[in-house]
Length: 190
Image (cartoon, rainbow, N blue to C red; front, side, top):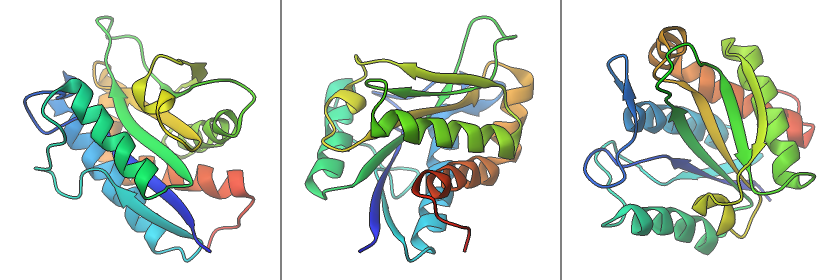
């Protein structure tokens, strides 16, 4: 039985629940592509089956911020997915702040250990700074999913070096998340 991974590409292409912008990049474009690359890697591996929240770059979910988040969670819960991975990019008013971090609902859970594996693998693959696994129980997608869920902040659009990686190595970020999943499950690469 293949492990079911639901990939949520954070944010809508425009309008409500659109993402951050920086250095000529839009969060919703980066997350869309990284999510598709990740889904392809997983679906090419018989041990997994993956679905995405945004099958096309134009896909808009919900009619407001809250219904957009609700739609993503409902898709994962009703499938039902075994794991939920939400992909985002960060931004900060201080352009020096950089790196990858992964948010979870609570520590010492499957989500927490999965987050650790994913973060290590992203840092190893693309060379971003390791900002650690962080707790954020207020995040809707972590709170309302019925399976272990992680929210991955790939890097900072507001930081020149991170933005370069987010623009030029989207497959690398996807590969990092995939490698993290393999490591978490104790699988070897295909």
